[in-house]
Image 1 (cartoon, one colour):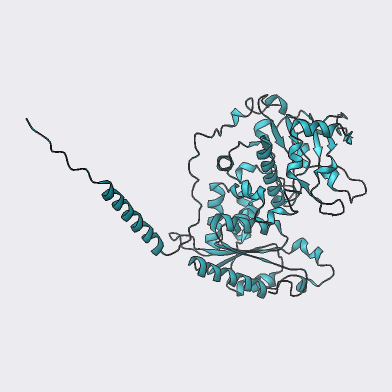
Image 2 (image 1 turned 60 degrees about the vertical axis):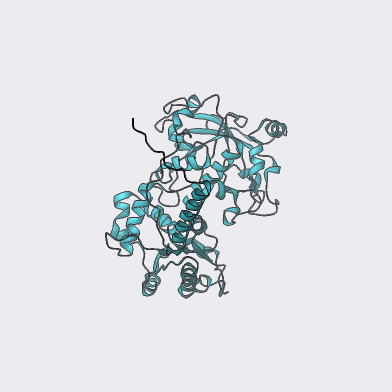
Length: 454
């Protein structure tokens, strides 16, 4: 008979000592490792099977001729529409999704409209630029898109009752009216608008940037506030085509425009506590295919060799264009910050990255709507670069939307960012760089000589 000798079990003290040593060794290695910058353009991690990402679980089935035939009786929905330019529309959809979170509803998101790019460009699907499964997983609710609910080819005009926020908050307008959207025609929706109660306003009626309050609007999605509001004999507009007057729908809660909505302060996406940004916006990540396309454009702009990683860079967004209209008679060259001021801000960002993170971001990529060739020559003289969409044939190959998307993605993937005050594109880029990369950011003031002096 053979006996196998049992080895002596190590004592609890020995085990704890070994684990502590391994932890300290690993932690010490991490501390001694130099800081590095890695651009996150890989495919997102697999989505958890715990979260149901199947759209068919939130509708009756494939898209139908009438949207209502595809809504489930055990699910409540919320939607809105846009007409404010792409970046503003991104904010609007972020607000819509946040409102869905606090009302316990499933948002239905329309396509982006090209009104501020080129009216001839077709609408663009939300989920082809933003990673919807990743967003749903992060925030814990499912997102539907309108083409999943109603057949985009349907010619059936649906009646729908909705709330008008715009008519309520635009009190400084002589005859306020609901805010329309080209999306309504595309979706074949005939809306009967009901003016929201005055108490949805966040700000004083005397302010011309009047905002509505998230929670005031959210309350209209619950029985008590809804019934009390409808008892106020609020102004109702019959639908333009069928001329029917409908109460605001409760199964599909809908509002005309959700851009001017905040929790506490106007223009809240500019503020670090913004709940719509914290709980939704920062989770609106680009699709992997869009990330790769933008990275390829950025690499060619910086002349990065094929087998080398994308280096850290500072992205810059300078908006001039229609901002000239806000210069109030001040000459443009005195109204806008000169390139010397922009370069100073870039240097500040580079120094912060160097001292705080050990990152040398020597590359600078400019994005701007400036059309003056001399200005761009001065940008080149600073040693900075930009994406030449004409030489890249980006519009020809991918479409008119893509230069806008690629600019936004390049801005968001900078190790640092410098932007333009009061530009929502700069606001979102700054937020993304801070949240996604722990980056250094600066926003340049303008509007008068020396506006950005500090």
